[in-house]
Amino acid sequence: MHARLCKLIGEKYVLTGTDRAKWLTDWTGNYTADPVAVLRPANTAEVAGIMAIATEFDMPVVPVSGNTGLTGGTSGEDMLMLSLDRLNQIEDIDAAGRTATVGAGVILSALHAAADAQELIFPLTFGARGSAMIGGVLATNAGGSNVLRYGNTRDLCMGLEVVTADGQVLDMMGKLHKDNSGLNLKHLMIGSEGTLGIITRAVMKLHPKPKAYATAMVAVPALTDALDLLNEMQAATSNAVEAFEFMPRIYIDSHLSLFPDARAPFDDSYDVNILIEVGATAPRDAEPDASGAIPVQTQLTEILGAMLESGAILDAVVAQNDAQRTEMWARREAAGEIAFHRKPIVDTDVAVALTDVPVFLARADAALAKLDPGAVSSSVAHLGDGNIHYSAYPSRDDAVLKDDIREMVEDVVLGLRGSFSAEHGVGMSKLGSMARRKDPATLAAMKAIKAALDPQGLLNPGKVFPSTD
Image (cartoon, rainbow, N blue to C red; front, side, top):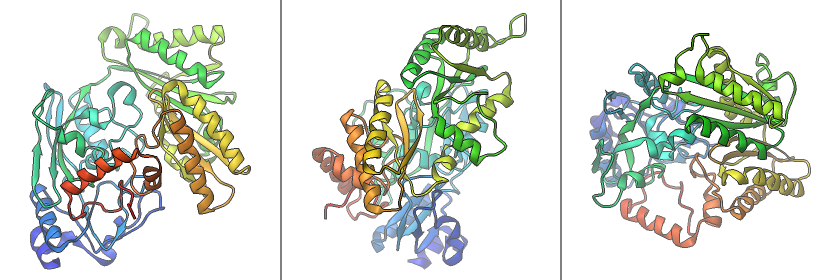
């Protein structure tokens, strides 16, 4: 097998021994891999050839992109790890049609830069944008901070190319806004975490670049008050709010502790801190008026001023320049470092209805205190779409206690008809949740699809689908 792989993709791209080091640990440090080899194909044909060989030798294959996931999606032993990092071509930016045709190894920030050069944006963004790759964000249906306006990755994908378990190529690379010709295999592959096929290329949707942003940090009396601010801004800006992010006091304190050069968002400390950003694409909202003021920024300032006067908010700071906007976003995008700087940790990624976010947090904290009086929690949330990253820090590193905490979070979430997995994927870390909480009929249907598309179980085994043993 080794000789055939070397002939197919070149010996220098079949990595063994210490050459694999870069791929052996994920970003969290919680999951490791011990592959037989790391393969770095250059194109779709080589990926297809690898899968044909793997099928012949009954060898599992774990695809990997930027390896920035949080759920153990690239972990495994005695398998081939297939890195997509060389499939990194931005093949086409269609400015008129507002699409980008890209390889799965294109780094998210590189696509941002290519779109920006055409006065467009690819709106998916999060803290790991400098290393996460398109194949990975598609495989997990990543969300990020702009879901409120632009949707998840699935909403941003128009076409897809996928290599199947036996080395066939599914060509779904159209740029169509409508295609009702049978089952939507594209949507089936997005979010499947490499268990149904390996994404090699994609057509991604671009959007007009906002001509101006209005960004602010806002403190509100209680989390229940935050939606009033969101709804008022949506009404005033014709739904132009791009981000609406919640950071509690403990998060702000942790940020200041972890990043000593950072500044606090306000002179005083508050329990509920919101980052809001509005993107203006119309010239009337973005071009400076006679005084030099940007209308969308003036609008946000006036609305916040009126709410401050009425007591609806406690404090507000509106960014006056790009540096201040960058500083506000740096605070939010440090969430990964903030969450994982403390151990032991039970990190969760849940979704509930917008009005249930404060209910979830109150119930989860109360239940956590009963399970482990010495535990503490911290959260950060995409408040505009109901996605909460709830981190619990138990008082002891006890596997049973940590699993009890995860089950408690599941109980609270499902009591609110929410989801125990919002944007990070299932990987390995949520296999228990899938087994306990996924509707049995739904889980059986998912496993039937897996068996049909990957009968030998070679694609990313041990992820997403809990064992039936």
